[in-house]
Image (tube, rainbow, N blue to C red; front, side, top):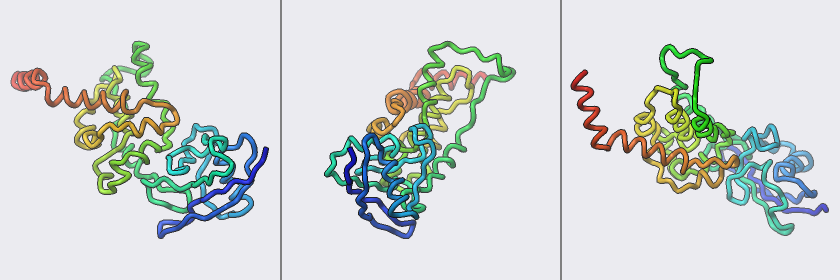
Length: 250
C-alpha cells in the first residue's frame, strides 16, 4: 500500500548546504535509494547521488540515514513508520562533492600504501598450497565491498581530520590482517600496521563492525589479532632475545 513519506535530504556542495524537505510517494517493498531516485525524477532533477548495483554489492550508495551510516539500497522503508521523517545526509567523514556524493579518494590513497601479496621466492603461480582453515580465515575479509561505512563511522578520522595522514582505518586493517595471516605471504606487515597505518590509534570500540553490511567481524577477527601480533613482535621478551641473538650471529 502506497503512502506519502516526509524526507529531509541534504543539498549543497563543498561550500555548504542545508536539509531540504520533500514529500514523496512510497510503495511496498521499496528501499531508501528508490525514494531518492523518485525525488530525483520528480522533484529535484539535479540531486546528486552515487549508486551502481542496487543490490548491496558495489558499496556505492553509502550515506547516513537518520544519522546512521547505511547502504541506501539495503535500507528498507518498512523499517520506518509512515509518519516518521527520514533524513538522508552524506557520509560525514569525507569531503562533500555535491549533495549525497562525497570524495572518498582518501581510501584509495591508503590502499596504494599497502604492499601487495608477496609469495616466497621461487614459488610459481599454480604451486600455492594452503590448508582449508587458512583459506576460510582470510575469506571473511575478502567479502569487503568497499562501501567505506566502517571508515565513515570510525571516530579516529570522523572526529579528527588531522589523523588521516597517519591512520588507515578499519577497511585497511582487515587488508593488512588478511595478508599477515596468509601462510604464503612472506612480507612482515606488523611494523607497517603500527608505524605507518596507525593501528595503535584504534581503541576497538567495534563501531566499524556494527555498520558493516557484509557482517565482517572487523574488530574481533582482524584488528585485535593484528594488535596481538604487534605486541608479541615488539614486547615479548623471548622474541626480543631471539632477535638479539639472531642479529649477533648474523
